Length: 88
Image (tube, rainbow, N blue to C red; front, side):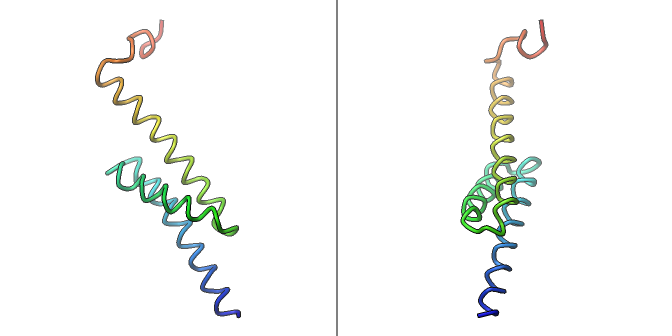
């Protein structure tokens, strides 16, 4: 029984770390790949009580970077008006 619980705790820790590290790496390189990994492992880690805080933070990071990515694309394509970008 102890061995099974120890393995489960290790798996929860690995799942939480994977989601968090993938979300952080997604900010800098290969956004779509690492954001997807961070989001999927984060959602899977929400089931476990031990990894829930780190997975929640990873999901929040992925969502914030997604919004920033959308704003960047809209800015690059000139969809957003100048007064919104540079102020009044």
